Structures are given as C-alpha cells and as structure tokens.
Length: 411
Ligand code: 3PG
Image 1 (cartoon, rainbow, N blue to C red):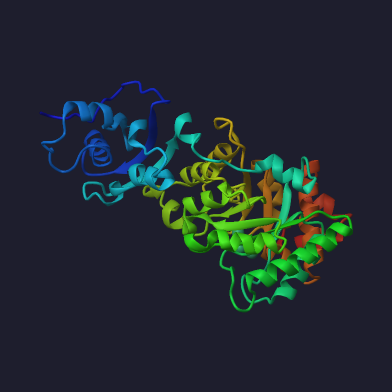
Image 2 (cartoon, rainbow, N blue to C red):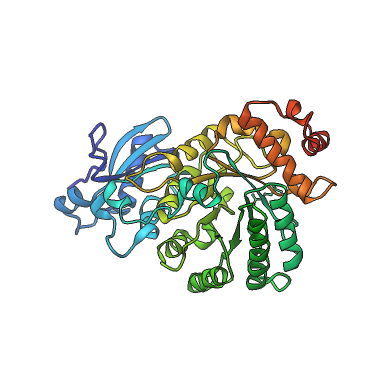
C-alpha cells in the first residue's frame, strides 16, 4: 500500500484543518519535500508502518495543499490536535516539531499558521487588549508612550521607582522592567513593585495615570507565586518573556482569576527563531500564539526605525495578526521598542498608526537633562506625529524635543 500525502489542489475546509505555510530549502523537489513534512508530522515515518491503514491515513494524515517554488502549504486535520490536554505545546510539537531536524531539508521556516475556530476557542485570548489598556490609562486614541527603566540592571528599588516617577512627570503612560530584570538581590521583585506602586499612586494623586509592567519571567512552578507577589504589592501590570517562559506559562497567568492586570509580553530570544528568513519560526506565528495565550501587548518591532533587525513587511503582518478579528477574542496592543528616540517617531507612526505602544529606554534615559526631560521629548514627538506636524517644526515650541533632535537628529 502506498500512502500519498500529496493532495495538491485539494480544497481543505479551513474549519477542519490547521493550515501552515512553510518556506523550504531542500535538494528534493518541493513536492517530495512537502510530503516529507506532512508524513513526519502526522501519520508517517521513514518506513511505511504496517500498522498504518488507509482509514488512519485518511482521518489523521496531513495533506499537502500547495508545493510550489520554495513554498509548501500543509493542512493538519483538526482531529490531530489534543482536546483538553496538550495546548499550545502540542500544537507546536506538530506544526514545528521534528521537521526542523529532518536531514532531507536544508532549511525550513514555519511562516504562517492558520487555526480554525474550534482550536482558537480553547484559549483565553487577551483579558484587556487594546481597548482595555486604553481604558485603564484613560487614553482613548493616541499611541501609548513608554520607557524601559535603564540601566537594564543595577538600580536599587528606590532609584528605580524615582525613574518611573520622573518618566510619569514627563508624560509617559507606560514603563516597564527590562527583560533580564526579575528578582535579583540588588532589586528584589517585592520591594521594587511596592516602591514603583507608591510612585504610580503619587502620580495618580497628581493627576497622571501610568502603569508599569513588572517582569515575572520565571519557572513554570513559580510563575503564579511571582504574579501574586507583584499583584499583592500593587502591580498594575505584569510582564513575561514569552519565549523563555513558554506560551503555556503565559496562558497560566492569563487564565488565573487572581491575575486581574494586563500582561505585557516581551519576545526576548525571538531572533534565534525568526531572524533567518529561510529557517525557524516567524514572528507572525509567535504573534498568533501570544494573542491566543492571553497576552495584552506584544513587542513586534519598530518598522525599521530602531536598533533591531527588521523586515517591515513582516512587522505589518504581525500588527495585522494582533489586531484583526480572530473569532471574537480581543485584540493585542502592538509594542514598538528597541533603539527608539524622538527623531524616529514620525517615521515609525507612519507604519504603526495610533494603536501602538511606543517605548524608549536609551531614548528617554539618554538626554543629559534627565528622565523627565527625556520623557517629555518622547511625548512631544508622539504628539507631533499624531497631529501630522514634523518633529522639527514642533520642536520650535518644545525645548525638550529640540534638545533630543540636536542629540540624535531627525530621521
Ligand atoms: C526593550 O526591552 O525593548 C529594550 O530594552 C529597549 O531598550 P532601548 O530603547 O534602550 O533600545
């Protein structure tokens, strides 16, 4: 009996299949290479198992629906995906599992992942999303503007909280821990949260709403305890590095009733998966899974405006995936961060639109006049772009912005 995983041209019902687009580099012709993926990731192996019947193949075998150039589209029957137990880890074990190690493929990239309603509905999705974050901050339309407290590590809790307070006085709506700061001796989580909460309370009494995302990236068995420590000490937002914690760690937080604050999602380590355009897992796939798992805001890049390597067209796809209709689950706020400063905000906002959280660490902490001035310059740059005025023009009446543009230019 020969099993043929190629069902080219066959129309698959998108409600019955998880459909994946792969970019493939192989010495095999693309149809054979695509078949290898389909068989390895569903009912096949390197030999024909005598136990594989036509019936099993028909029901559970993945189907290659397109194999052209370097692209292979494969549909996995929804029945291959576990129900109550399995979750995103099991989805990834299928769509992004053994295939990456197949010797017959030189490179392969999981570029897009389309999930049917029946699968998406098993996940919480964002608790707050774009609208919820805007409500919390009383900021209905303009981009959110934030900072990452710098230096990345080393500040003691009170200095850290003073930084946040100054950033709020400069007008920022958001601030956050950096991705490597969690509970080190020089700045323990509990004390940091409680000092920052005092700073945020003070800002609110003075008429300014701001939230700070506290990084609780940790092992699975400790993550709820870490969230409790943060929330009990007044955290208004928590944060995880989703790729080091894992999507299921994020989901545990999103589904726990005690976690009643937004979850900020950092993508540290993504470059190992996303950077090679021919190999790995795309940021688009990470975006889809982060939204399903319940993050409220996700770093997706700076549309070429910052320090990180960027593919603008792919970042626009990520933005779309976070914000478009997805079987009724809430949208997720796209976050732009990495090497940003006031001079690049106009360019960034042309691509991002207003539904974006813009964050600058060095861009706020860099100007010599202090954090408050650096934060003001960022807010002024965002206001200028929001009003459709060039930063240079706006700087004529805004000295902090003028100073930042003198330092870094307008480009
Ligand atoms: C981040 O978390 O995105 C980085 O820490 C950004 O820092 P930067 O604005 O100084 O580049």
